[in-house]
Image (cartoon, rainbow, N blue to C red; front, top):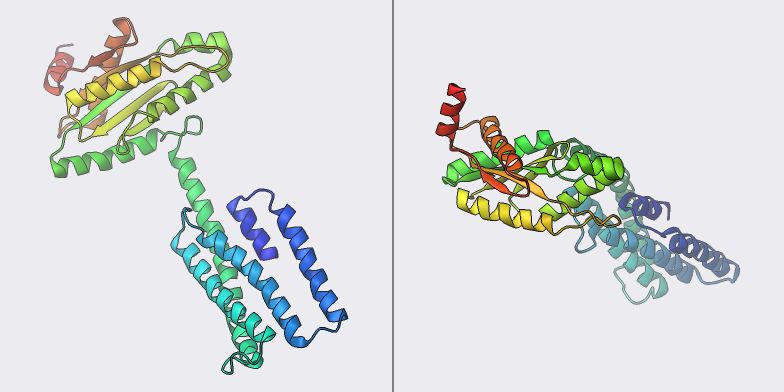
Length: 315
């Protein structure tokens, strides 16, 4: 029962105490009632086996439940518990009907159940510690790569994922587009509704943007209200269409409570295969400021790399 409680806590189940505590208490009362009532040893063995069977089955379900993500370690522990579940089922059967299976006598089942139970203790004991470490490692990885406010990847993770995506696009000889995005009048929004209102706007923007992106698109928060979006395998025309879809989606989003409507400015560039990502971001940022100067709530296409480099040299 304590092991089931540990797994319930580990997997974050709610209200498990309302089920486990009364069930465990009822099991203990049933056992002592059978002992005091003079029940045969086989029946008591079957009763105890059924109690352990129910608790083991609960652990098997938690570890191997369909639809839930399962690591290799979690599968190993779950399969080990499932084997013990089968053994306890046979033990309960031979305890209730000792004459049914000549090969599986109560004494033989007692030995088998002790061996499998010992293995269960070792695997589950060490396995649960490793599961906790595995979970902590996942949480640390999320904290290291995710923006805590919006749930998007942070600046560091964005550049790491973009580097991998660019390498893959280069091998496949696919285009690679990049956007810089900025929320219009964000400072005014903060002044009017406070920082809580600004945070709510950023979260709403992130959720709205994620709703129109593809699975392989990479969007990250670079800082403040500034975001970047990488579109692997997308040419400039496709990137402009994606930017327009995103702009329209953001324009239609309204903050609950205050009714504030957001708009966004977007700078779009096509990344040259030999161009450094920082240079591409600079071109996209320049296009972003052109959109801001031209009236906001709009999209601007950045200059090609060669033209931008020549303009920078003249400046």
